[in-house]
Length: 175
Image 1 (cartoon, rainbow, N blue to C red):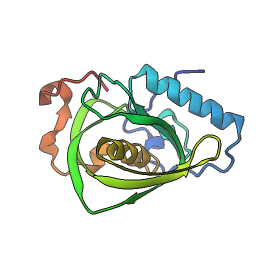
Image 2: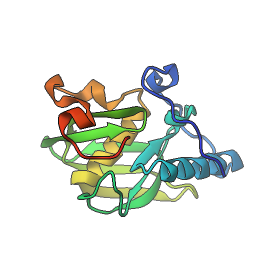
Image 3: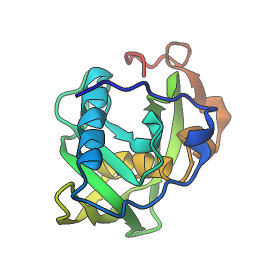
Image 4: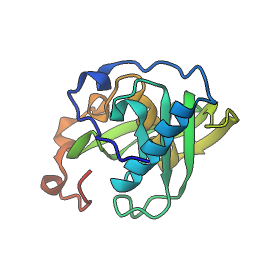
């Protein structure tokens, strides 16, 4: 339908806690999800949260097949996740590089739970309940953070591993 402008770090909407979706079979929700997928595909992203395009609802999308920004990443199924709940399955965390469409050009090493369970609804109201690990778990946690007003730089422990991709020697296209 439409490619939307992605808000950048500093915009007040990105600092807000998003509201739960109350009505699943709403044409406006379906249009939002379509716009989110169009925007994510246009920017070659791995995921997108509704607040990133200025909509304060608890909706995220994600999925990776072949992506030049993540050439070594495992495949993650294209998913719509509404009103998500994340449960860490262990205390084990792993630090790895992350970028964000709302923080273009920058990368940082972010600790994330290695194994999680996520639950929520898809766009038809069907229950999603998955147990995942590694890159898949990282993507879900990153996107769901946006629903609570958290951007990945807020999770960085060591700011010597935060900066512009080219300065850090990370050969990835712009975020």
